[in-house]
Length: 468
Ligand SMILES: [Mn+2]
Image (tube, rainbow, N blue to C red; front, side, top):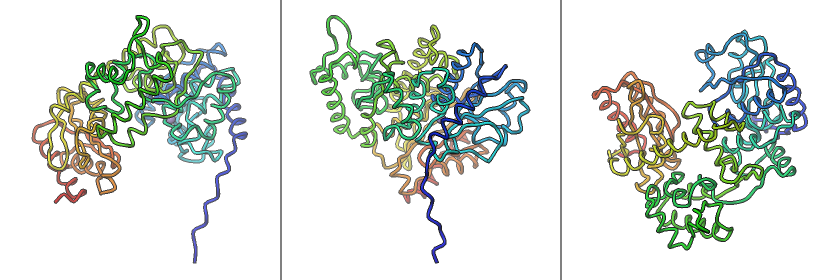
């Protein structure tokens, strides 16, 4: 007998969501002593900035507090007398929020709610939307505060930052986007998605391209200049250095297709090549040559601020504060330079350790980027993608931090880096885990430990991939 019931089709209620969002927004804006508690990524920063801006428009100062995650330990850093506005946090920790003694609390989030709760909140899941694609925290915050006259620009940046535009905007994001289009706040094109189209010279644009790494071009400015010359793409006009957006539409198309052909010829992974082109959102009201001009570019900048523990700079850049954008640019520059140097190091020093490639970046590559470097190296076309990459670095406390990156294909064949990191770290009293395709571990950095750890990773991966 058939026992499973067919799942009911979703019937998302956009009008119901909008009405609730506005109620929540108006209720929150009446707070007398608000504190915005937000997550660290682009969506967390843009949603917090939207809330802060709305309070500003009401003549109220709302300070912000960034948390990497909301748990019992981090909750202790929240002052108990403040009225709390959570953005991009809280929905998955409603028990914890319920237990806080703060006089008022509101949760603006798109993560699946952990329970039914009386906490004041707005969440697209409660209206049968999918928080992975239909709304992010920034778009949700925009719906809460749009009645104050806020532009949807930061909502769009947040959605792009959470990669909710992979198949075009959907659901509540689409509704928000359409309104922004109607008001002339945003233009939509299909174009290269590589970073640096607005702000970088064409040569640096290619030299610093790490998503994806273009073998032979990334990191080599001379090769990039030659490539552009051979493809007939001008780098100067009227005595001025050209950025990608300084090219005319024919030159842009020429460069885009030349880059894609080049990536194919160099064996860059096909999925990464397809991601090189896609929806691009440009804000006509922003000045030329500013990262704020383009959603993807701005989201990259904001992610760098979060990653480098500089949320105030990111929120300042969102709100157009003096100097904040420049500081954010400096952070991103530092970050990208470090990634580039990390990849250069990997190219020269990575070794084939049998079951995996090993990048021993201890003393050279910082623990905040070792994972990015492993991923870039794995996808660079420089190595056969038949085994994962394991990277080592040392964190500020002197502990060893390991990162592993593989591919979906390898996981289909049995690779589970989360399991490998967990088992290997346990052998040396460390902590490890993560996803099958990307994982990490942390352990005491004694030479014996590192040796035991790597040996165990090798054993587990060999079994997973049936290498012996
Ligand atoms: Mn988010």
